[in-house]
Length: 237
Ligand SMILES: C[S@@+](CC[C@H](N)C(=O)[O-])C[C@H]1O[C@@H](n2cnc3c(N)ncnc32)[C@H](O)[C@@H]1O
Image (cartoon, rainbow, N blue to C red; front, side):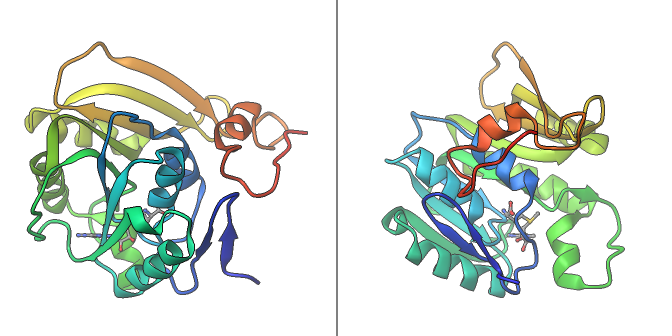
């Protein structure tokens, strides 16, 4: 089976990646929009899929993509080099929490290792793609706020069940919830929250996205949201 995931304008090689492309990335990458942004940071960028999607939608944006994993960073280099956006994308191979950034960013986006608690998965690389301890989560959020420009935005996807823990830590770091998109796997089955945090307090916007319809097929709203990225047309019947 091919390990290449094809998009309309680019391809993503994911052979050996600790985390493969899923609907989380498709939805988050399609929703991220900040036309004013000149610089962005993709934290825990994996194969680089989110950076590539965001670069496609924002033709003037420069993106730094940081990941701790050697194999992921190698794949990212390959995927960026082969893409039409190579001159605007840079890979940083390092632990985000300890990396010394020389600059701040207008836009930060992340599909982080969002399950909180002990590492239950024996495969360490895969476990560290999915899990954070509470203390590393606190360090992660604090570091995000250090890296963000005043007036900047943070897009993050989180599991619905521990969203409030993350939200509290953002609030403790003087970040305001600007928008939430509730993601339901199917009607009334809340699985993820996409949150947009900002450095300024604004009126909260609330939206909802249902991934699959009553027939178990992709919903029209999911197809519509992701249509500028999918290489093959999806259908809802
Ligand atoms: C859930 S995966 C997301 C991958 C990709 N962004 C996507 O959406 O498909 C989380 C990623 O975070 C990376 N990661 C985990 N801890 C990290 C850290 N402290 N610093 C940088 N990257 C980290 C992992 O290697 C993994 O690639």
